Image (tube, rainbow, N blue to C red; front, side, top):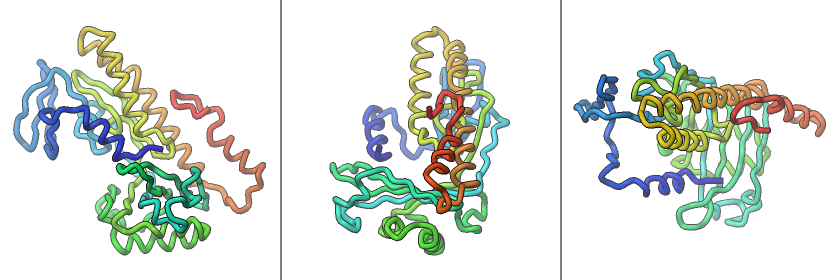
Length: 299
């Protein structure tokens, strides 16, 4: 398992400081005959031969490339938390750290696994897919980052794990401090194209898949590799971006479809786990993935 912080640091270290403008917001993107015009913090920032929109689920570039694309909320969320391994019930060598564990309940499931930290140790990490407070999103579904989860929302989570998780796993969640919690709504988005003119989409700026697929960072890296190959194999931006679109559009949309399918199986229409026999579980697991044909076919 990977740590997002370590992945980020490894990528960020490859970009010279002079080329990285932290805190600068792209406020407008316009196609031109000679390239793409950008406005940053409301001011013109030049014209570029090509622009990669790798700006996440609220992408400013997606509406220009694929204006019909709509970000849809799936109706449930992903609660997340992590904390130093030594805080575990048995300290840093807790058996909870030894394996990836999934715990199912009616209406969702939770996963537990360890991730590396910057000091060379480990953190206990968990993620729980399930319901969120009805009034959590008064202005529309949006992520609640670490440090922003309210006492009311944390109390909702505590009641949820008390009701649905076995004591060992409920305790593992409760050892997370409120400042270490975050909540992410589940979104679905497909796009009609990954490139238009001299603009292209990458990562969650393109198709958005629910994290059930376990492929968010992988998809973004594959997008980058596909763009690299397209630039190596073609002499003009028009040719390269057409090749990139052909390589990534169907793959990205297929991942969205897979995420919706897994969401139905594992959250929205999950079984009553307590009634399943081993044979029932094997049949259910087979139905999750059997016959799924895409660039991300789990088989």
